[in-house]
Figure 1 (spheres, rainbow, N blue to C red):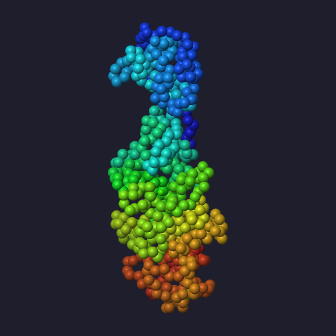
Figure 2: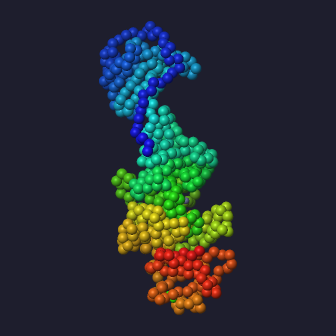
Figure 3: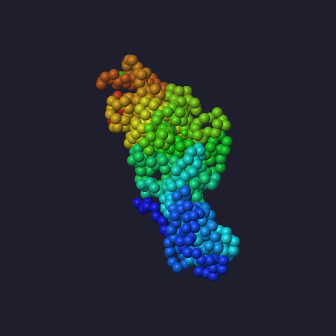
Length: 565
Ligand SMILES: [Ca+2]
Ligand SMILES: [Ca+2]
Ligand SMILES: [Ca+2]
Ligand SMILES: [Zn+2]
């Protein structure tokens, strides 16, 4: 673990030509210390103390209660306040040191004042006054911090955010070392090049003026808190790995992604017209970082239904993360459920087109997504990895992963509406990390979620019922539309197998322990056949025979959903 304690060291600034002492100006006279303090008190209304450091140097300290910061401009203001008493004619030759400094390649004879104060923050400066003009020509902080500091800035959406920064000497880095993790949360800028991670963002002030950095950096910290505080997950990998974000990626890039190779988030600046920078909307940040979590846990294959489920997990967690922040749940706020929150990318759309968001979980059809398995929007092109190259797969969005995600999205929206955001988050996280695997499809998602909800709230809980109701209403499982009789009977032998077609859902019963159901399907050569049994009340077995009656494949392991590929 790193030592997180903030530490500061007083370092004497080094200067060119130090030690070159010349006689003090003849104009300087001597007044006593008490006289100076009395004069300062008169001009500023505040008490100050003089500390003798050595024969030639004394420092002045006092409470400057109105000071908000301890930067050099405050030191100058302070000097202004006490200028009258520190004017050249009143300079006490014990109070200042005279120094020759190099300013823009010009050597100047100056008085070096030591200005020091403790409140509200510590500040200590050398202030150099030109002997000939009486003007302040330079200020130098004597404090050299190295450690965590709190800064702030305005995010892309106009809100003020607190930022955890790292002060290294006089510069502030977008690096958060305050979390209890071996890694750090750092934000880089690609400066509109196609570069990862780019340069660590640094600033000369604690107020960060790049809104993309403010958004990406503060949101990444909250996503860390979300996973840690709700699920005790330490960072994306569960082992406190560093969270790296790159903003200003490429030119006019209206996209964001989680890069599983480099383990980092990448955000473009938008297209400059229809889309704002992608880190503007917290749900997109939550979405990308959740891809990282999925990548380290269930590893849902990014293709077809498992890919759409992967996308959906990111959308669902994205909304939950944004609302967790919006309703200040971390600091005791109530985690509200509001319909209007269940959209993705709303803050990114400029409104210059009709597009109000990227996706809606409440009504996926608004953005041409299906809201149920029977919707005409269901994307049917299947990505067969053995036949279609990855390049061509992009054209079919890996089997419609950003389209069919609408179905589990709608289900999650209904679940959250029924049981609230917090329980939804807990069930979905547990299912993702405990029950989902690379091949989990929509029906498998239902089973995994029910198992997770059963673990957390019991088999007959309202939470399980909410899942069943939601997944029934999007037709992932059949519920209310259950057949009233044992359809397709008699079908107890290969001879009277019921003929089925690809792409259809057939609903029936195994009506008794002796019931066997045969179905037949014609499969053209070189096609992949996926058969899924879902919504099973018990552990059923699934066998695949060829036309001659010889067994080709079977799925008999104890589970209440079955898949044969
Ligand atoms: Ca949003
Ligand atoms: Ca039957
Ligand atoms: Ca039967
Ligand atoms: Zn995604």
